[in-house]
Image: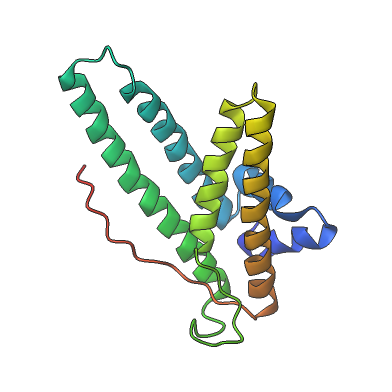
Length: 172
């Protein structure tokens, strides 16, 4: 079990973002409860996007799948915002985003967790291709380092929780 306010303490054990990710997916704390739905949405999106690539599909079936993809994308963005709100509720605004001393990233914590979720799906899909899997693991390591840095900064009061309100035009 992992609580959002203890997630980054795992990093002190030297386990890094992989331990945090595992704890978030398997945990019961407020952030963990926000991550599980996001990972579920990403899994459903993966399956829908695979299905829509079938060249034998009738046009009407492609339209139905594309609309389902739009609905899941809306759920994905909502889930990312839920994670960002959980982080904000735990850490709050410690420093203004324009404070030059604040540790910030080009993505919110929710967006980084989303990226780790997608990369986990890709790694699983490419299990039989060692070179491709290694490249994906490298990407996951880099995103994990960014998440580690921001997490540590939040835990030390040197960061700023941020959410990006993206305007999406998907219609469910």
